[in-house]
Image 1: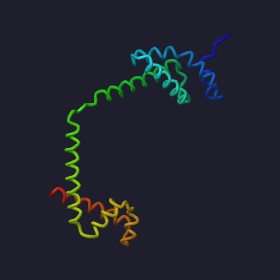
Image 2: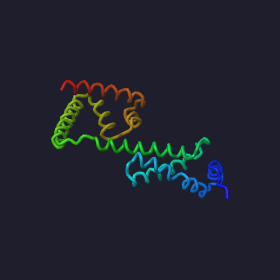
Image 3: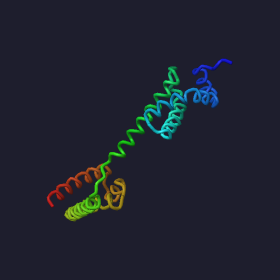
Image 4: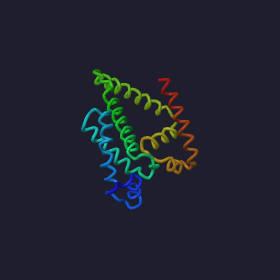
Length: 176
């Protein structure tokens, strides 16, 4: 019995949603894809995972296949997946481990607390209506549209005021 060509199997998958046709493609190219994945990953379990991911991605993107050699195409997919996984693992392993984390966290908390105090002091220096706008918008999460209605102004006017108030706050904080 003659083997069906890759293109015939792919047409069956795309046109008839024939799972057996894709299974045939998988059986045909699994060893090739696994070999490449194992060469890159250097670990059998990770290589098997790459093979699964590559065939899943190939199936999902089968309509973008342009008639090139299917085995080469799915192998390239596997290669890209394997390299991405290795890069991700390398980044995870090279993240610096800092022994002073507790001290740094405490220092960060102190700095954050100081910034918040400076912000509160700056807000207290604002005119009453500006202070209300900031408190309503940022603390109570009242939308600008609702603030505009409360103050009988347009929403755009309130947006401009918030922008200007924030500028004032930055200047007041920098002078603390």
